[in-house]
Length: 454
Image (cartoon, rainbow, N blue to C red; front, side):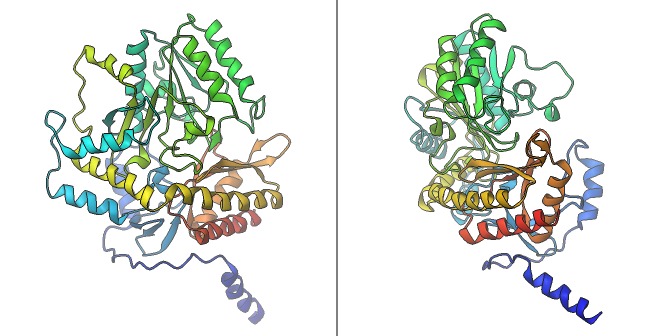
């Protein structure tokens, strides 16, 4: 029995250790997780879900780390669902928010304000010409909703093409764009929306041959529509769908087809934008295209409710047939946060860091794929990565239960990852872009332990 007792501490000591970090969380004396869960069940949306078998009470965040109510530190490898871009409570963002909070919290666009105009100018400077007119809203769903309205007004057409496995939001209009049964209520939705073959390099019929998938869009417009279309929507790397990059060469071919049928091309950069892809500031740039409308949210504000639509002056003019207004769009505090995020990305070198540290993670994930048969695919760009688990590599059978076990075990070891894909068999790794090389090693080591224990 003594040898068994000695083995347990030795095994524990061999487990990966979270990198050192100089921050002491504030003491927590609030309600317990059990109390919060009971109150949530009584007073909050019953359709909401929580991660993990035992719900976590997260009470503090600092850069790439989160702390629970016991003070335990976790590596946040999901960034509040790809929303914390520059780091939790980033000092530059906090300072900008606090300064503006002390001056003016709300005014709306009926008055001039320096923060919103400066933010629009700085954001537009990050986009290629002729994308130069900004509309600020509150969420990605709202941004895509507005983009859809713009496209229909500008073109005079109604039909829209989106991709199977996509996610563009849960408003009544964007739910129709979304192509995941998980997120689609059984109500009338998606008027005029057609869903094309998903150019998934791993599971798709044509592998990584983008132009072959693009031919399906031409066929769809020729057979399932009037031949005229308002818009084509796509994420460059599908987020909720499981970090699925579009097949190479897909967007240039589709954009040409859609424009030939009278439509505009919309890039949903809600998850891929702001340097996360590493090689480029925007996901669409990885495919060598310039869209007509770009939607963005999540990382734009590092956690504040902020989103935007950026388009050309010509398309923007289409809204002038009526008054267009958004109460909170361009809110001074949110605008100050957005400006600080742009500054932090540049000054902290976070696009470059996404490329470097994302590259290290991909190397480790490739090694895990070689070591563990359950790893069917590793993919993504920069710090927008996915690890898909399968029970059979030939059949690509989704390993749903195995994914859940790895997901839970990684939390026990100190790493919080996401889980997604239509079948819930993809580990989503999309941390704050300040992730370090040591963090990446810790994350991969924890994943290795969890996979080894299956």
